[in-house]
Each structure stands twice: as structure tokens, then as C-alpha cells.
Image 1 (spheres, rainbow, N blue to C red):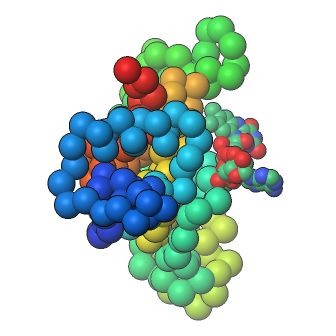
Image 2 (cartoon, rainbow, N blue to C red; image 1 turned 45 degrees about the vertical axis):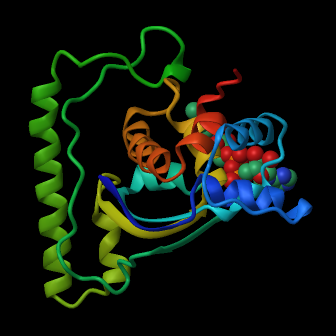
Length: 213
Ligand SMILES: Cc1cc2nc3c(=O)[nH]c(=O)nc-3n(C[C@H](O)[C@H](O)[C@H](O)COP(=O)(O)OP(=O)(O)OC[C@H]3O[C@@H](n4cnc5c(N)ncnc54)[C@H](O)[C@@H]3O)c2cc1C
């Protein structure tokens, strides 16, 4: 599971200059006044200047994470690999450990490391081996890849190219880096979080971390 930044357009100055176009102003160097402007824009819902900062990632994640990720739809462009056309053996995600069910609210998703985590790692490997062997046999015997993929587990990884604005990523990260989000999607959101912070550190601080002073 990973997200690699392919390309980006703009940074903090892009948002500042987009906001200042109404006064026909443009700056070349970001200063404290600009940081105050960014804070004001972020805190008062004037978010369109942040639409001009764009990022493109190549993301690889298991299908169950991709399903959650794709729920963030507004402002995202995505193109995904297709197992209708790809026939090579898929990679399957392996968790570092299996977690227990939560002790408190079910909304928490999961608790700590399950006491039989290592045993379930082994059982999972058996399932992965069984299903990928069956998949490969089906492909070899001429079954259509679009149907053969049915036997693959939800942990099978998929990969897509995704482009969105800094604001769209801020909205996604604010939801998916929270403790109530599933650990696996949190890991992915953290990679995006770091990349966005590098591209536009001031805007990111006010959009996501919500500092107001
Ligand atoms: C911890 C967690 C648990 C979740 N559990 C579930 C679950 O059990 N089941 C489930 O189905 N989903 C679940 N979700 C997904 C969640 O319901 C959202 O679909 C997801 O977080 C994407 O948010 P969004 O709709 O704001 O994103 P986007 O679709 O990108 O929308 C962005 C914003 O655009 C506006 N918008 C989008 N569509 C419309 C519309 N049709 N009309 C008007 N305005 C619109 C809204 O302001 C919205 O916030 C969960 C999310 C999280 C973070």
C-alpha cells in the first residue's frame, strides 16, 4: 500500500494570488500578511483559492481500502487499472498483525493485536495461496480475466492515478486520519497528508490542522 506523488501544481502563493486577483494584486514571495490571508480564507470557508493547488498521485491499496477511498468523490479525478485486461498474478495486502474486535464502541473498528494474530497470518496465507493459484489456473485454462478475478480476496491490491486539489485532499485527510477511521486507510491518508504538507505547508496547516492563532 503506497501513494507516490507524480506531479503537483502550485503552492501557498498560488492560493494567495488566486485570492488577490479580485484586487488585481500578485506577489512573488510569501510573507506574514499572506499567511494571515490563508488563515482567514481557510477559517471562513473561502476555499476556492485552494482549488488551484493540484496534486497527482499513483496510489496502490487493497480493494477494501480503495472502496472507502473512492467514497471521497467530489473534486477527484481517478483512473484505475482493470483486472478485465490485466492477467498477471495480483499482489495481495498482508497486515503486519491481526487486530481484535473493539472492546468498547463498535464504531471504533478494532482494538489491539489479537492474541492469535500469528496463527491468523498463517491461515490468511493459505487462503491467499489457494485463491491466487485458482486464479492463475483459470487464466491458463482460458477463463476470461473479468470473471476469474471473482476468486481473489478483498485484500488484493489495485492501483490508480488520482488528481485533486489541495482542498479536496484536506477534506479527505481530515476524515481519514482520525482515530475512528480504519487503521489501513489511516496509513494511506498519512502518506497523502505528508505530501500535501510539503507542497503547501501554510495552507495545509490551516485547512487540516485547523490552527487559528
Ligand atoms: C469513519 C468513517 C466511517 C464511515 N462509515 C461509512 C459506512 O458505514 N457506510 C457508508 O456508506 N459510508 C461510510 N463512510 C463514508 C462517508 O459517509 C462519506 O461518504 C465519506 O466520508 C466521503 O465524504 P463526503 O460525502 O463528504 O465526500 P464527497 O462525496 O467527496 O463529498 C464532498 C462534499 O460535497 C457535498 N456533496 C457531495 N455529494 C452531495 C450531494 N449528493 N448533495 C449535496 N451535497 C453533496 C457534501 O458537502 C460533501 O461533504 C464513513 C466515513 C468515515 C470517515
